[in-house]
Length: 136
Ligand code: GTP
Ligand code: MG
Image (cartoon, rainbow, N blue to C red; front, side, top):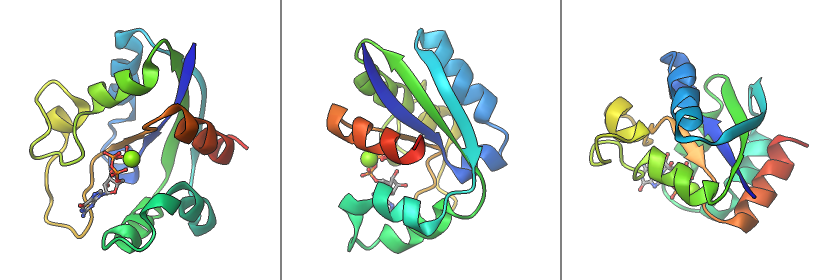
């Protein structure tokens, strides 16, 4: 069975959507096997978002992710990486399909970073790397 890292980002926690997001993951049939709430620091986020270093949204993203507590979840199930990304919807919440987490619950707030409620690992290698960082 496969595993992935899901993060409820600071906007999701601040809007009290953690339960709704966990509900959707469980209702889909995936297993929550570990969970922690934490305030991420720059070092952790720099490692997590290393692939985006140098992009225009990198600095606002790292700042935003430190703006409040986040909830990191280890989720397992067959094809959970693809399955959670499907549940989450596309990156931009304005155009994410209704029925998805971002499409149903997210919007553009006119802020410098796309606040899109959740993170989900995008491949087995990134899941392994990210889970090692967040569940060290
Ligand atoms: P994650 O599950 O969070 O990794 O989202 P993703 O895989 O859909 O997006 P990606 O990994 O490409 O980017 C990581 C995060 O950076 C996104 O979730 C957004 O919060 C932000 N981001 C990505 N692309 C853009 C962009 O073009 N503009 C802005 N402002 N933010 C972006
Ligand atoms: Mg990504």
